[in-house]
Length: 328
Image (cartoon, rainbow, N blue to C red; front, side, top):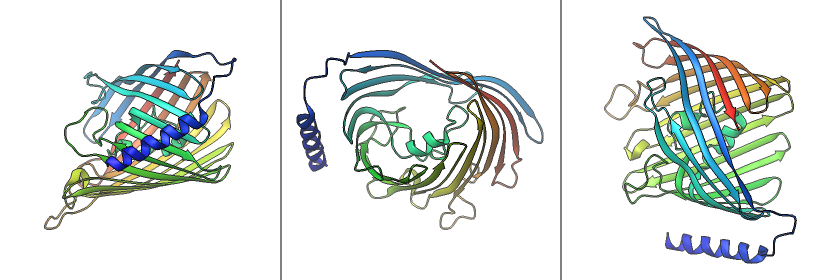
């Protein structure tokens, strides 16, 4: 591990030295506040009951500052309702990092965005409606303390390597384990994106993750598919989870989108057991809806959702949502 940090320091030093120069006269350092709010109303139906709720599920409040064309910093506070609709808000430091970028090289240090599902989440594009597959089913956290380096070798290929605590942004450092990970992103054409990512953490029992993703992004149609597998979840021998996610978006106009998504989450059956280890969380999800963008910074999305649990004694859950994103 010491060799890695020494190697990383050399890379950053070489990049900074190679590109250090006086800023062009037309550049002015500066920053700006940022805010992103997710709110919704939904009605949920099961066999025996129904629930109605207004929610503010998340509010990101922060500030970003650009010191130069190469140096940038960002801090974001995440106020979230971990049990949506029950008014138990908690605030966490979601981002607090410094970034250096020049040419095809970028380095991030601090409380950074993780890279395991960043590409798929960006192309999915409806984070205010629902998290992407890996985030939703806890394959990884969307942010963590650590370092990440990326390099764009060409228009066709880029690679990234990260070393993080592995505990997410809700916890800082409760053990001495680290989670190294690496990914490769391919863009063989202007409309095609493919990515593979792997990481691991642990000592005697190692948790290992594999994420694969491919997408088509056209002017009027977007489609993506991913398959994810995690071996020895939470470093428990024999506890594995896996499954696919498929999504598509049709854009009939600049302000209107029609979208749909299908997820399936499965878990393994440990040796000597009769049922999967997390059968209460396994199942299939379907989302279908419309997004309307009336003005810049406002998105409205009425949508329907179905959760079909793997547990045979559990009833299907049907929901109607109106999700709203406010960005300013």
